[in-house]
Amino acid sequence: MLTDPDPYEVRRLCRADDPAGALDLLARTGFDAAALRRLLTGRAPGPGPVPGTREVLLRDENGRTTEMAVHTPAGAVGGRTGALVLLHGVGGSGPRMLSRFRDLAERLDVSVLCPTAQPVHERSNRLDLAGLFGNAFDAPCWNLSGADFPLAALRWARTELDADPDRCLIAGHSMGALATWNLAMRFGDRFCAAVPVNGALSMWELFGTDRRKRALLPNLLPLPVFVLHGDADRQIAPRFDRESVAALRGLGHPELRHAEIRGGGHTLESLDLTGRNAPLRSELADWLSARRRGRVPAAVRHRALDGAHGRAHWIAVDRIAPQAVAEVRAERRSATAIDVAVTGAREVRLHLRGDLFAPGRLDVAVNGVRHAVAFRPDPDRLLHSYRETADPALLDEQVVVLPVPDDREES
Image 1 (cartoon, one colour):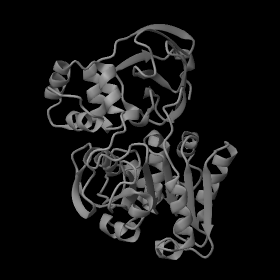
Image 2: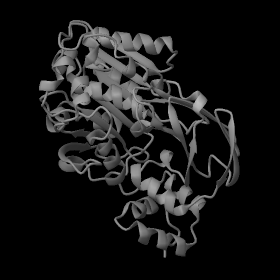
Image 3: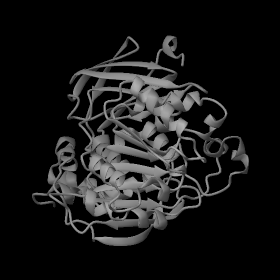
């Protein structure tokens, strides 16, 4: 039996290959869902990962593998280190990307993780990356929808390095910047900041506004974003990022930075970012060092193009109409009452947890239709939700699926 377990010990137990054995041990120790959640969200650090540079084999959720270069700083400063997932451009690799930014690990007290892209054969993804030339684009690339190595790297950092989940960053250059924009818009609740460098939302915008991608920009309002672009970039025009920044400013983004590097081209070397003492690099590092993810919010607004990124915090939408942009607005009015408004989807999911909602009866209104929901926290569900992302902010102890009334399904 566990004796006076600390949070690190329980995190390690719940990530092990025997979830049934872990549940049995926890049950015999007398842990209910509330006690297990308190330990999984506890901040006590473990012994810390071995410092230095290495290459590891990374596996994504579909079983594909790639190499990932990792550099871990010499020691944690006052607790667990964070994690920076750094994405290369076309023709690049994780090891080459890491060689340019390894020193950020010590400066920011984060592990820097640089996976190497692999081919993605989905036609829509290739078109987003290469516009009308996408049919002929067969180079290794990032999957902008999320089922890929960047999110696998994030989970790896939390499980293998016990990284601080509230200090996880994403950044990328060129194709990696397209992925940074798109992953941040879809999964922003998993990061504390995003830094796209010489990127765009979609290369379709060479031929006109990509309205579906731009419809996701409001998802970035809770996430700090630092956008960098060379003003002489001839591969991905700086106007794409200017338009995205202008849209976010128009929405009132509270933590948005934008820097255009005078005379900067498309390569990293032209942007005054790769020199250790470069002023812009120092400014970026200082900005990143101050980023921390906030608490799980009581009110959530999220847009989605498909169910794969339908969740934000404790609410999710699914069964999204073809070509629709679904939106959910949810508010926890009290520990026992939730109001939800949904458009463009036929199903809503509540990811309930005991530190946000009171066990027992919940009063849930979906587009004005009221539901009485019985919330019964389940340690088994809690453990499996932790194993999915290793992110304590995304834990749940029960998932409730409710229909969306027909009269509010328009996109």
